[in-house]
Image (cartoon, rainbow, N blue to C red):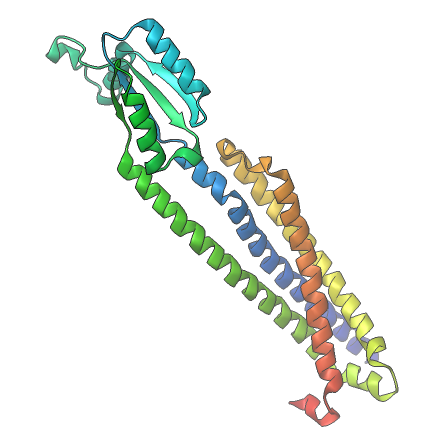
Length: 292
């Protein structure tokens, strides 16, 4: 009979440990994924900004020397990521491919202009900077027009600011929720052993002696949960990098390493503090208060 009871208690204890580990792992995993989002949010925003194209249309009278010099200066410019020359013939082919019709059959000639498509670096994709670049380029006599989607640029910058703000707010709230959830799991685990704690205290054990095994056991559970969370984060990061190679998510190795270490340390610290506070609470309770 005693053997069956011992087995039941052992299974109950193991079940309690598993639930604590799973709770810690899930919370740290979600917190870590949010951290990955925060780290890569600027990179994702920059990726979309760098898809904005500033097109420089050239006069038909522009000389090859002038065009080549302009292209070289654009490639070397601080704001330029890439500059591609597009002849009017190539532009006509692109339009034909998009529409499925050859407009030159109706018009009788090619009305398009030779142009240079400039892909800007993300930091320079602002209305103010693009206006300055446009004014500077417009001073060249062989440039007919500089065109870009100003409404798209403003919309993109405004949305990036809003998203960044809310991501930071959500990160702070989620961190608080993570701490509270892990703390609740640890407190429930300690609560189930409140009578053992009080019994040890009644036979003369010091508070430090009583707390030590509980704290160490919780820290071990926190380490296991943190490791499981890190494995999950690594898998998510790996598949995201495969799915979106253009974002180069694995380039920020230092920040990613800091995030992983932070998640691990956070799991250990929260479990340690939560267990310390929980055991201290039951140590300070009177025996008759343990039943409430």
